[in-house]
Amino acid sequence: MNQALLHLVLFFIFTCFEYIVLNMEEVIVQKFLGDLNHYTDSGYTIHILCMEGWFRFSYYDKVFVLSEGNCMILMANRQIKELEISEDFACKAILVVPQMLEKYAPVRNTYRVQGISMLYLDPIIRLSEDDFIRCSNDFDEVEYRKDDIRHHFYSEVLGCSLTTLFLDFFDFHKKLFKGTPVSDSCARLFFKFISLLEAGECKHTRTVSDYAEMLCITPKHLYSICLKSTGVNVTAWIDMFTVIEIKKALADHSRTLTQISEAFNFSSLSYFSRYVMRLLGASPSTFR
View 1 (cartoon, rainbow, N blue to C red):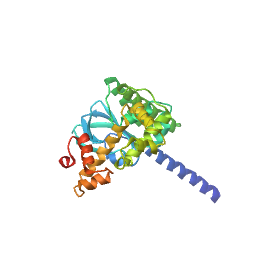
View 2 (cartoon, rainbow, N blue to C red; view 1 turned 30 degrees about the horizontal axis):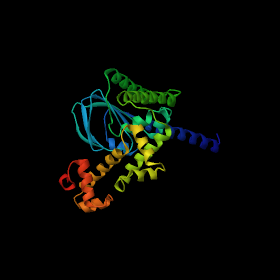
View 3 (tube, rainbow, N blue to C red; view 1 turned 180 degrees about the vertical axis):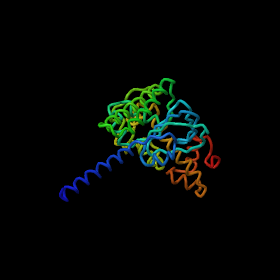
View 4 (cartoon, rainbow, N blue to C red; view 1 turned 120 degrees about the vertical axis):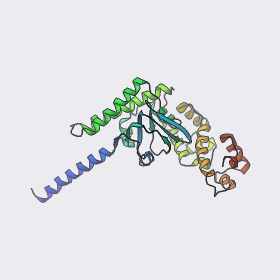
C-alpha cells in the first residue's frame, strides 16, 4: 500500500470515528438529573420522566413540582433554579441537541409551535397511567437504540425511536392544552417575538407597537399571533419577561430604584412603581 493510499485510509477511519463520537453526543440518556442548566446552556433540550419521588424547582419565576408518574421538558437555553429534591427521587432523562429536534420532530406537525410555546408557561406534562407506561417505554427504546451501535442502520432506527418519543410528547401535551393549529409563518413570528423578550428588549420597551415594528407586522397581527399560538395575549408575555428582569434588578441593592427605573426606560419613578405594584402587588421598595 503506497503512502498516499495509507493516508487516505487513515483519514477515512478517523473521520468515521469522529462522526460516531459526535453522533453519540447528539443524544444523551441518563437516569439522574445532573447539572440541568449546564446542559441547557450547552444547547440540549431535556426530556425528564419522574419514576419516583419529586423535584421542586423555579422556572420563569414560578414554582413547579415534577412528581412521580409525570414528565417535563426543559428547552435549550432555559434556566431553572433547583429548590428541593426528595431523597427517593428517580428519573429517566433524554437530552438532545437542536439538530436532532429539527431532524426528527416532524416539521409538518402543526401542533409543534403550540406545544413548545406552552412550555414557557408550564414545563410539566401530567400523564395518565397508560401514558406514563407509554412514555417509559419510549425512553427505554431510545436508550436501547442509542446503545445498539452495531445496527447496520443505526442512525435511522435511533431517529425513528426519537420521532416516536417526540410525537408521544406532542400527544401527551395536546391532551392537556387544546387549541387550533397555527401556520408555519405564525410560528416563526411568535418565536421571533419571544427571542426579542429573551434577549432583554423588555428592559427597553414594553409597548406592543414597538415589538410589532421590530417584526415588521402590525400590532393587531402580533396580538393575533400570540393568542392563536398560546391563548395568552401579547401584553401578558411582555409582562412575564419584564417581571423576571425587574426582580433581578431589585435584588441588586447596589442600585437605587431611580437607577433601575431609568435602566428599564420608564418615564418616571412613579410610573415604574405603579407598574411593579400592578404586577407584583407591592411597591419596589416593599418588594425589595
